[in-house]
Length: 345
Image (cartoon, rainbow, N blue to C red; front, side, top):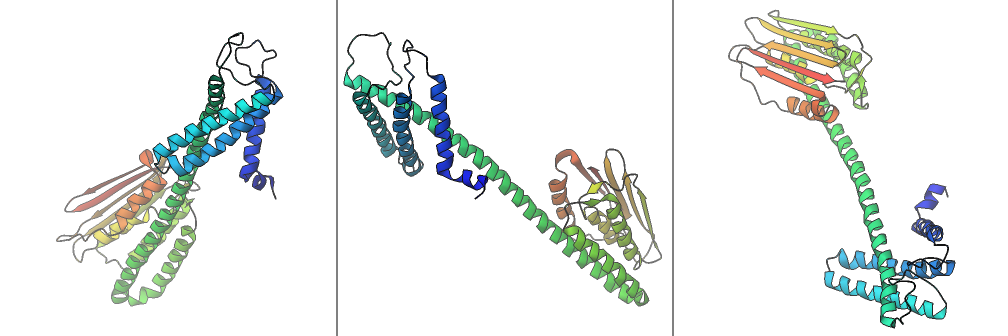
């Protein structure tokens, strides 16, 4: 059994705490009996701590089974009974042997003290212990709950990110298969090359989906391969401009984060007649990464519902680059569609 497993046992933890409390009582004990608060002597410590410990564990049971179950009246009665029983035990111990505990009167008072007052003194000592133990219980519970909530939140985020990655993979494959179908009708001789490029893209998809981050350079290379695959099916009336300026390609980046905006360019810009233009610019600075895309919109184009593309992108941006670490601007007119994504890496 390791020390960590040994320490997790409740009896061991509580035993260590009581030893610390006993040591503190010994350190704080006044050197003489002249103090107004008579806190001294090993007999005192053992007697008072034993009775108080018993009352504390009884009170813990009351908290769990009465107070936290909203049985307030029964809890109040049981707590008062516990205090009186603890005071009576201390009074009994003091009659058996001279054991001093915290007194609520002047030490030089010579007037006789009734048993009821001494019972109240004992109950007051026990009440102080209950208050301190209850505060410690709920402070510890609050700390444990805080860390548990953090752990649950981290697991939730990890699950959400896994689902989002799965959605990205399915969305990409669906669009690419549609593109290959169009290519098989328009230029079947280019299908072997397209299938090889698709295999490379899917391999990258599978590898990156297992990682929390890739590099800016590998993501740019992936985009270049994707654009090359898309260009195989384009008509001669479509011009594609793709530029990359990455002075630090080794910087980490969330995988498959740029693809949805590039996909939209090819989804919206393809028209049977007229000039179609697509502009994709990926630049890197000391601050972060910027992806600017723009594409013409053919006449009589009717946009279909966005589906998973942009909603998934916004969700992943919020997860990977929350708050001011990202900015996504979209401008759409009847003839042109432009996006500007800025990331603080």
